[in-house]
Length: 99
Length: 270
Image 1: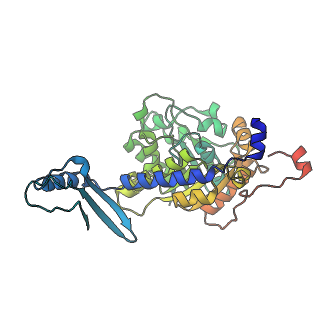
Image 2 (image 1 turned 90 degrees about the horizontal axis):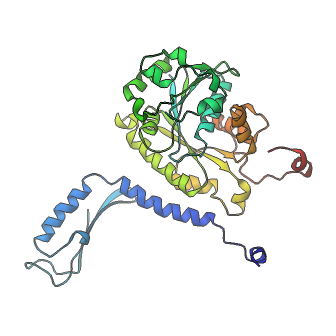
Image 3 (image 1 turned 135 degrees about the horizontal axis):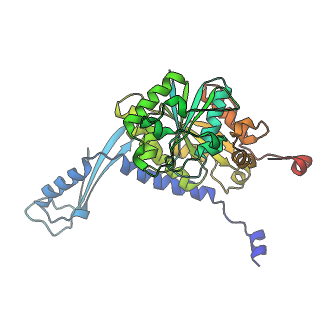
């Protein structure tokens, strides 16, 4: 049975799967290994500043350094849950800044 | 000016020592005085692959510690006057390769040789970092297989950040991809990453493709660098890779499935 199945149902080529998996994992690893040392500190300080105005936890802020063409792109994403403002700060669902 | 070439990969078992032996012998055959150094302290194997295991008296660590001088430790190859082997020590002290000591030995070797081939251990520990630290060029030995490609990418990153050239802000180590154990038949059937795929993923220039070949095991069995086997496809592919390293243009061979005639299939050898 297995023999006949292997005759009539050839498995899909695995090399293309290998290539896609490698591209994804390496893109991720290259980004994290080339990130400058100041990113974690920047993230901490941003958290402190934003935390003065809205309730925020560690996982609600993401700082990444990427590339867009020839320019480096520092991307800061801050999630803010709608109702938990401390003082009269911004009220949008998310702040996003690109420098 | 002498040139230091590290043969490295991150992953083990991809063919670093085979490549070191073949590359060193290939450079010697082209008339360049070459030494090949084993950096795998505690796991000495280059001597076996080069067929000089019974001639080892002093080693790398002896020279670093001043227990022997360089010329007492260097082994002259019996097949070629331009070729020398510098064996490593079987000590279990992994940190015996002190950077200052290695630097001193390297400077001394540069006075005598045109090419210094450094056979790196696997991994990214002390031995591997020491092997790549002094490099001017690097040959990244890669198998067409996911774990090897990933580790190669990692070692390329380390070369760009931890080598002496990187530390001193000198021109970067020039890196070359050498794809080994390549099986064109399996590539054609979609079972193996193609050379173009690996090139695209790692984005470094291709130095050569070494086909999977029975002659590689035969070469290590007998302690002969595979370039000395003129019948061997792998040997010829290494000769081409060395020629490209020296600046020649050569067409890539052994990257398409070979059509073997009936008689060669019956009587020939790979």
